[in-house]
Amino acid sequence: MKCFLFFLCSFIAASSFAQTYLSIAPSLTNSPGTTAGKSNIAVELGRQRDVFSLGLDVGKTTMGKMSGRDTSVYLELRPNLNVFQQGRFTNTFTAGIGGIFHAKEDFMTELTSGIEYAYTNKVHFNVFFGQYFYSGKYSASDVTFFGISAMFYFAASSAGPLIKH
Image (tube, rainbow, N blue to C red; front, side):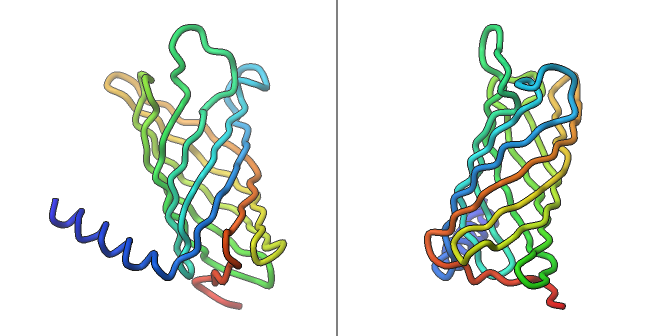
């Protein structure tokens, strides 16, 4: 518990130099079903400091109609690293962890890579692909996805890459 509080306080202190962003990210999975069943949506609110960002993501694993209780809503913590930058383009890497409400496979992790384009200092677009891993008490599954996102920084972005060319 002390270790968790230390990291939380460190993140809050580091956030004072960070920029706040809001992102919306629709995507499609390669799972069987209708287009609505394959469609996902996510909204992320986070803070970025230099090459690292940390966001809280809320979304739906499917936009298809559910019979009974909705088991598609999730909440995820998404750390992101800007690995390489060339001009206005940045290669991104994200590893997320979260939970899906009321689902049998309620634990979720994510690995994503993307190519981000800085349209302006406040507006960025990202093309991304990755994989979600779901697990529960008796079963586990995974699915790959492809999507686009639009990110709005509330102040001009000064994020840089980990490696500059």
